[in-house]
Amino acid sequence: MKRIVPVIIAIFMAAATGVSAKGRFTPNQPLPTQDTIVVKMANGAKMVLQLDNMEQLKSFRNYSLDSLITVLIKYTEEMDKSAPGSKEMTVTLGSTEPGGDPEKVTIIVQETGQDGTKKTERHEIRINNKIKIDVEVEGEGDDSKVKISTSRTDSTKTEKIKKDKPSNFGFDVDLGVNTFVNKESDEFIPDLKPLGSRYVSLNWRLKSRVGGSRSPLYLVSGLEFAFNNYMFDRNAVIEEDEDVAFFRRATDISYEKSKLTHSSINLPLMPVLQFKNPKGKEGFTIGAGGFAGYRLGSHSKLKYHQNGNSIKEKGRSSYNLSDFQYGLIGVIGYGDLQLFAKYNMNGLFKDNRGPEMNVLSFGFRLL
Figure (tube, rainbow, N blue to C red):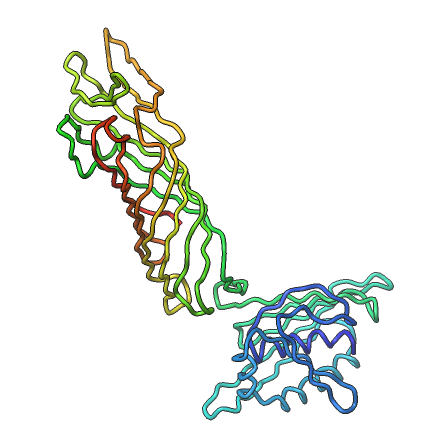
């Protein structure tokens, strides 16, 4: 009988609540649960209910438990007196609600190994071909060990049931372009080549739900490593003179490439509304917040041809770029397709030590 107890509990779990359970225990130990209700009978018997919330307890009203107990007793008796080997049994559980659909429970028992004193059995329980429970029983008597795993199935795939956690970590990549905005300086400020002025950010996210399990509101934070490339158009170059950075248009050399690059580490903080689609997966997403960061390094790069040779020059300097940066960020999208925008509220250069303008980055977020 002890070998059947985990199977009975597993059927109760799936038929009444559809909640997944996975663990390893001995028959004399309680099942690992979030909330457990133990119903003690007059003859000393116990019925154990594993629940995540009150809604699962209310769902028991939809099932005829007396019919289930009758079926389980019949199953236990047949298991105890049946000969070794594979066995299959199908049971239909009716719903107490008018018009409710019955649930079809199929139980398959198979001996997978026996070596004298140690025996292993595999119990496969299917609920309407949508929920599958695998119960492996190793050994006999008080020394037996049981492993239960639950999964959802359909006609094409099997998907492990995942508990929706209130907080989780993730990784994504931002790929986009940069542009200069709010050009207020009287000095020459070049235009940027769109394809060469790339923005790349590697992002480690911590997403925490605000509110109950059905709340669409999340707070997203984490760590970003960002790389900004500014490739100048019209033969423009960046230079320094007396600790002041400026742009000039070269006339003596035709540059194939002229760019400025800097990297930074950023800390974002952004409230996000993330809704589910009818299938329960991520649907429409929208969010806006801010960020603060620090510049890690910067350099310029020139490429040109001279006397038939290709020459590359790289200059490592701060070019009076702002060390600290802050600004606004926003995302919008559906499912795995998201767009982002990032606006630096502080100037690209330090005050009075370079041209006055801000940077706007935008593009795709790859989840």
